[in-house]
Length: 178
Image (cartoon, rainbow, N blue to C red; front, side, top):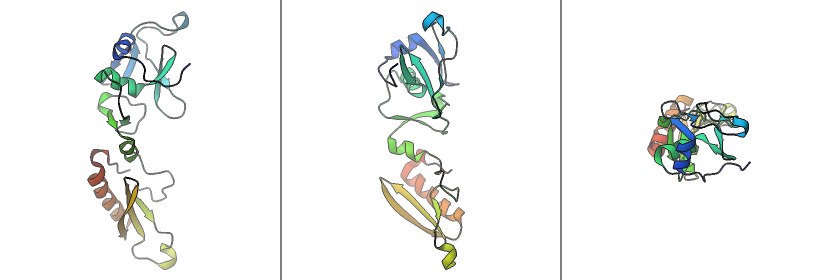
């Protein structure tokens, strides 16, 4: 089996699958596979390992469903990455998908798992307790690989509000609060 590829045409795809843009689900148009293993009308695809994306095998090649959805709806393979607006990688509804650069896709991500504050763009200065700081929270944002210091604040919420203002300014529709 060949790994993920983008070598299928839109006509081939629509001949093999039906895509429902309201649900994001692909169903098989024709029976395929050894001994009719895949029946016409059944849902196509499976969760791909632990990454949460839906993968569909067609003609011995594995395709990511969100990229197939783009091909199905536009007639062309995406030139950029496909971003899931709500961060749910298995939610391939058309309204949840948009083309995005790598940077835009990264911006539309949740706070990192090692973020102890739980608010994106906010950190607690390590020396805050030792020096009894009145403004121990720092807000920072990274734009074009450059870290921009947004200031120090009395509360994490103030720092986060400042981060969100900057995020909306720099990233527009891709800004994400959590």
